[in-house]
Length: 221
Image (cartoon, rainbow, N blue to C red):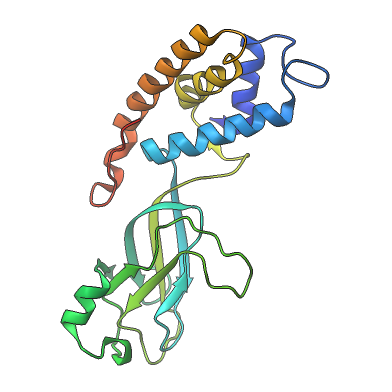
C-alpha cells in the first residue's frame, strides 16, 4: 500500500526517467491530475475503495446530507446506542413511500426502517447552507432522539493521500497515465497502454466488485 499520488508517480518516474518534474516534459501538477483522474475512474469501475459515513439523527428530520465521496451506497445501518448495529434500513423509492402511507412525511416511529437517495451519490454542495448536494432520506424519523445514528457504507473515491494497493497502481493507474502521456509522441504505444488499462481494471474488479452485490453494477469500459 502507498498513497495513490506519490506511489503511482514514483512508478511513472521509474518508467519515464527525467521526464516528470520542473522544466521537464511533464510537470508534476499535470501528472498528478492524470493520476487522480485515473483513480476516480478505477474506483467507479471496480469498487476498490469503501467509504463510511456516520450521521447523528435529529428529531423529526427526514433529510440528511450525504458525503460527496460516495459513488454508490451499499447499506445503511441503524445504531440505537451509537455503537452497536440494531439492523439495516431497506432501500426504497419515493413511490414506495407513497404506497406505504399517504402522509409519510408526517409519520414518526421508534426507529427508522427505510432510506431513499434523493439524487445520485457524489454531488457536492456548492456552499455550506445550499443543501443542493446528495442527500439521503430516512423514514420513519423519530420524534425524540438520544444517541441514535445511522452508518452509511458504500464504495467511493478518495484523495491524493488515500492508500491504494501497489498492484492496483501498477495494473491500472500506471497504464492509464501512460496512455495519456504517450498520446502525442507515440500514439500506438498510447493505444497499447489503454488496452493494458482496460484489462488491468477488469482484473481488479474481480477482487472487489462483489463487496456490495445488492447495489454495485459492473460497468463496461
